[in-house]
Image (cartoon, rainbow, N blue to C red; front, top):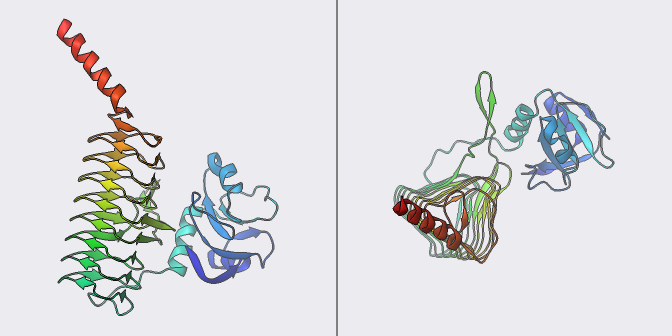
Length: 305
């Protein structure tokens, strides 16, 4: 999530009421999660296990809960609760603005696009040309939809990420400030749920087709010309490369990559990253030919008893 205008280290430290290490006029451009950070971004870290990863990431400002040596060319914000203060930054620069109408006045809708009754379109949504949005679709703020897209009834674009910190008092939610982006020629079936990014974009690329009742988690990127069948659940921060086929009732772990042209057969649990150009099946996931050989061997053993 980029700020509308650059901030300084001092301005952010003052907002959070925290100490800092670095030049007071050090430029701060936005906040991001560690897997998508860029130069000028703030990343937060609140566990020693991840200090090194955060300090050596592309982020140039680290919101951290301990004073440590600051890497050259970077800055630190020292907080007793980085999770809380990361939320504070999101709320300050990207506050929730309630809508009072079904289709926001700030939404931009392209030529020849059809919006069926009972659709909700939030603030600053952009929809391209020649799209059709069917009844009861909900499109949250800041979503971007390309040209020649179709979205079927009851689908939701832009719900919050499923991201919580377990505290003694209960689960504390990480506030989502990202977007959903659909490129051109994307079709979404009925009752799909596409979560927004925490700080970046959940993206579905050109030509991908998604069946009914599919869930896509926060910050996931689905490549071009993918086919994803019904009741699939894709976790957050997943990368699905181009031309992947995923059959029904597949589930994935978070943070994995499915390589270009892979085929994931129905009811597979994608527990790890897999390379492209192969067919996979089962839980834990294996190449489908090998998995089916194992099942056939087990069946023979059972018959011999």
